[in-house]
Length: 98
Ligand SMILES: [Zn+2]
Figure 1: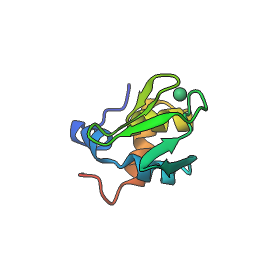
Figure 2: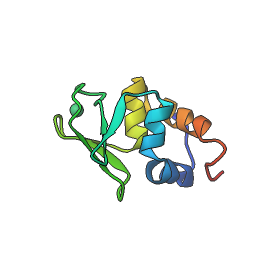
Figure 3: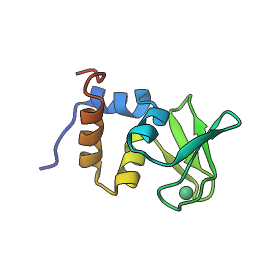
Figure 4: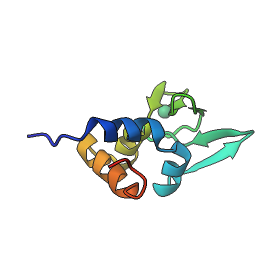
């Protein structure tokens, strides 16, 4: 049986976790260039990226992938959805809504 997470927690991880903070926690290569967040894409290793704070997404222009915090964690840690969500809930246990 797949583990079920509460919808509020999943919504919160996708929408409220700061991608910049997540990159720091994952110790993932990134920097700010001209006010933009530039990161190394975990799919293609290019660093042609953009950050969309309104939708809480980071995007790689090279391989055309959008990452929310859960997607990014799965790609960066090469893990499945459940493991990524558990990692995020553990990392943000002081701030998550439950
Ligand atoms: Zn890419």
